[in-house]
Length: 413
Image 1: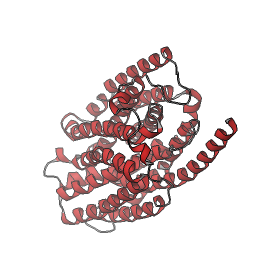
Image 2 (image 1 turned 90 degrees about the horizontal axis):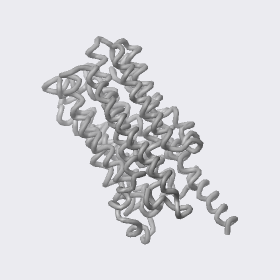
Image 3 (image 1 turned 45 degrees about the vertical axis):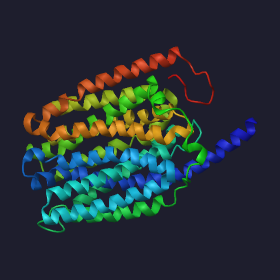
Image 4 (image 1 turned 90 degrees about the vertical axis):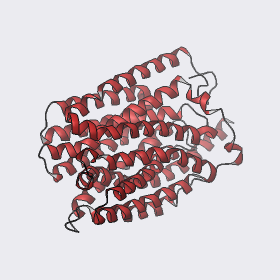
């Protein structure tokens, strides 16, 4: 029996590795979508918006799209399989590029916001890549699968900002219009890659099995995972979305901004080559804690000066902190559900993360415009401390209540 189980795990991991390669490539290409939007959104917004305080609304609409797309992504994946959700997502990505270019050409702020909202829907689907990589994999391989898919974002960190740098002036005087056209083409390539992912429709027995979502969500382990994700991603997003406009307000160039965003994205995904191994060795809670501390350190650096170097170091440290905390929180989520519960639990987790991120994102423009870059950084500290406290409490509860059913998630944690 043990030999049969081991052979099944090896076969499942081989299938998972094949999917990881495709999903990592898709992550690299899909990351160009968010890179283009975050590198240009507040600058285009400042040009098209009727008031400077609305400049970051296009970025907020992207985050609203992220939040709005999470639950439908889970529902579609559960009913029709993940591959169907992937294809729909890349279709939204193509529309993002085409409509974004058209909006810039027409000078329409409303259409540009709609384009970034569609980009958020695409981003919501791409968030499920990390969980799809773990489907069917052994417990030992799951953190590595999640981490390796996230590593594909390293190439997005190079591709996205460089795509903007190479194409932003091709259609003068319409800055960035051609960048969005190229982004649409990149989404089409991602669609072709994702069409080959081995993600069959779930068995009918899996559609109605498992525990109620409320029971799962009440676990201290899930609460800690979701809360750390809620702290990690929205705080990173708050600083990242404000940085390009803040740099412009401080007299720095668009090239300086592109460089900062490029290395921020590389820092976001570069650690993924070893984050999974760190989680396997030290445990997810410790890695999450280190990541949250680094996010706080990034804000401290942001408070120390407004030169280009200060912005760049802030964004780089912020990216590393986000990677450790978010990948670690994702690994924690995988410990809280059974296979038949995965789609609803993962979608609910992402809904919480990106729903809170959407709320905070709308405040970023007002915060920056009315109170400045220092205020943006100060806001980060209280949530980070809260995340660390809840994480410590969940770890304490887990130590007091060890697993009782080998091979299954802890029912009471």
